[in-house]
Structures are given as structure tokens and as C-alpha cells.
Length: 149
Image (cartoon, rainbow, N blue to C red):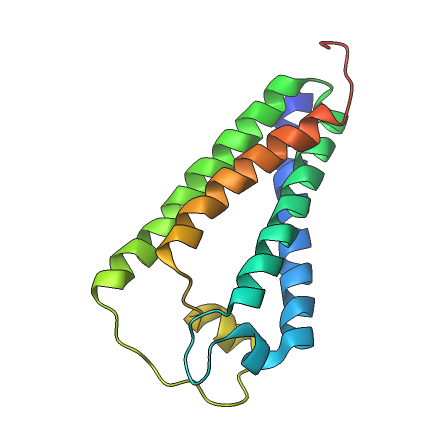
């Protein structure tokens, strides 16, 4: 039981750290003009595509690490459920914000923290991200063989 809990926590932390670091590097590489549509905080298509790829990699890493530590695939299912539920919870403000949409003009040079706080992603992306995350965790868990296989 303790191994399962540690596996879930470690998997989630690995995902968090990977996403934070990789998205920070991505923003530094693309800059504000590559990450956003002109003069807005709406994320660009290139940002959406690369962020989906990075999210899948993070989820696979999390699922793999979870099973490596927990030594069972049930822990990865718990992690996938947590990723899905938290992802939907984080998508709700995006869906609500669509109704109250006020276009804020973006400055040319936006620091990373300000960009993270003001970024606007399409509602479909906000809904697909938790699903992709949960499926990625499941896929990553299958890369690691355990006794319950």
C-alpha cells in the first residue's frame, strides 16, 4: 500500500517537474511572439502542438515511474484518475472564461510568469489535455512489467 502511494506521488511529481521545466524552456525558445497569437494571450498553434507532445511525454514518464516504484499497475490507474480529475478541474475556469471573454492586449515582451498567468487556451484543448494525460499515464505504466502482468 505504501509503495502504491509513493508511486502515485512520485509519478505525479515527475510529471509536474517535467511539464514545468519543459514548458519554461519551450517559452524561452518560442518567445512571446511564438507562444501567442499576435497582440493577444491566445496560445499559438505551434504552442498547442508542442505542448500536447510534451504533455504526453510527461504522462508516460509519470506512469512508468509510478509502476516502477509501486510494483503494480493499479497505482497507475489511480494516478491516471487523479490526472484526469485535476485536469478537468483546471479546465473548468477555461470553459467559464469563454463566456466572459475580454481580449487583453499583450505587450511585445512578456515574462514567463506573466505569460503563464494570462495564457488563454481554446476550450477543446483544455478538455483534451486531461484525457491525453490519463491515457499517457496508462501507456507509460504498460512500459514497465510487474509481477501482476
